[in-house]
Image 1: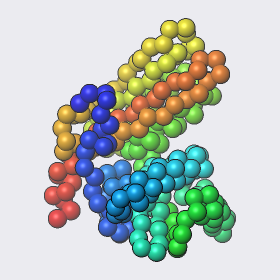
Image 2: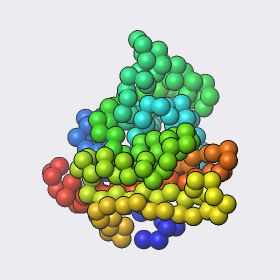
Image 3: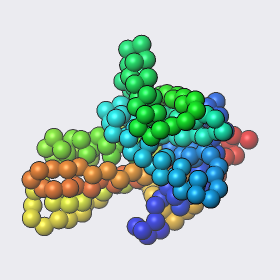
Length: 231
């Protein structure tokens, strides 16, 4: 698989039928949007989904957002958020999540009943998005990237992940010439469609060195085996 193909879009996702099913499988292997539309409605709803997820990612940057799944029905909408720190999302007496819901309704002019469900993702080191975001935050705080990434590689090994690859690129350590460095362990079968891969790409913005790109790729086993175990 070349670098021009997204590892996530290249592979089919499991359909999320209800919240109970979501609790029995890995959140990163679920379908991210569950709705149906035709004609110009599809284009409109797709763009709205993208903007909603960008807004939620920005608002919940410190809560360890793993996945955001949007389900649309005729007169209601359900947003399922998988986070590693649910307490920060819910807030005292549900104040934070209620404010987030009100902001989403007013900002995106959502019609009908809007419901937000919070699900805890107990192992943050099985999520490529959480790992990439934490590395980017640490690099912005001037933490040495080599020691930092090697520490995360060791943490990933204890999370039942069969393989991982972390790539950093840009003006590393503030040098004038940009370069790319790779850190990996185990196997990453990028050409196998049945492989359960989780990928994330995050940017760290530095005043002195510009933008540093961080790409995290995790291999969690065969997706076909996971399907068989659920039958």
